[in-house]
Every structure is written in structure tokens, then in C-alpha cells.
Image 1: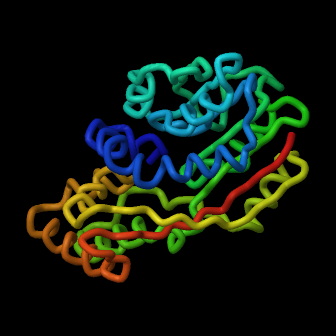
Image 2: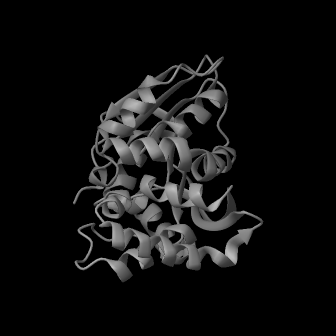
Length: 267
């Protein structure tokens, strides 16, 4: 199953945009933009842009004199990205459907490339990193984040454990390609990057109540599988997930941690 099949349906894309984006992906995007050190006037590429969250944050930094491009395989996610209004005072935004393994840009086209939580979905991560290196200008900056393994994404790990407990057939999803600091460093160096730095960052995501937390499930990469559960399975799934998230309860809601490997490098 290709990476876009996880997100390329209307329901998953809509819930991702409405519920997961503000709680998980915008905070991580803000952190990555800071790490990238984006500046006014730069030309920036966001790989695996989804609904354009990180691209829009990059547009704020690049300003009207810059330019930001976003690429993704999911037509549904890109439809959301293109439907949004321009960023006030920000760089012009262009979105293209393309695989990360074959970016549709000439060599040395960008000042910076960013990628938020895309690496683990790519069929060939080293090839994707080599493409990011190819489209960067000499000295151009790469900044990416990838979940720090299954245990690093507490919410997803709980979802997958609950799914495994209730469904009668294994998931059709290909396993994700998790990286740690050492493996990411090796891939970046192998792709020809210089000044490679890796590290771990942790953020807590706030969920207001149980109902909204359970609703967020359908916006994850497991959303299609969860919707395929029959009513009895779904009730058991919800109960198991509620139990798994109990340690993170705060009042009526939850504060759920996630950890990501951050990679910074120059072309």
C-alpha cells in the first residue's frame, strides 16, 4: 500500500485537518520552522506537505519576497491545501502532487527544504533524502522531523494496539519506516548532506475531552481501518483506547506526549 493510500480519502483528510492539525501538527510545525531558521526572501520546499500546515508557516517566514512550494501524493490533502486563502503578508504558495522520490524541480532550486512527519511513510527514505539534497542550493538548509519510533507517538501506539486487539485480520498497511538518531544521521550523510545534526524533541498535545480524542482517531493513518470495524469491534476499540490513554488524563481531557527525531543539515 502506498503512502498516499493512508490519507487519500475524504473522511481521513477532513478529520486530520479539523482535529489533528491544531492539536499535533501545527505545534510540531512551529518547532520545525524555528529549527530550520527560515528567512525572508527564501525559496522553500515542504515535502509531504499534507494540507499545507508547514508550508503556510514557512510562507509567514519567507514573506512576500519569498516563495514556498509543497508536494504530496495525497490528492485529498492537496485539495485542502489549495483551497485555503493566501497567507497574509506571506510568500506565494504552490502545491504539486508528486512523490518524494522524484521531486519535480531542477537541481539547486531551493534555499531550504522542510519535511514534517513524512520520512516514515516514504517507500525509499534514502532516495527521498537524496532528492531533497539534489534540489537544495549549495549550503541550503534541510530540517525534518520523524516520529521517534512507535513508542514515540503515544497516541498512535495506543490506537494500533487497540486495533490489533479487536480486528480479526491483520492490517493491510505497510509498516512505517521508523528512524532513530543514528540511522537518520547515517542516511543524511549517505545522501551527501553536511553539518548533520540530530536530536530528540518532545511535545505534549492537548485534547479537550474523551469524545474529541476518540474522534481524532479517524484522522490518523489508521482512520480507514478504524472505520471498517463493525459496531461491536468499535465499542471494544474505544474502550481499550480509553484505558490506554488513562495515564495521560488531565481533568476532562488529555495531555498526550509525542517524541520526534529532528534532523538538521546543509547541502
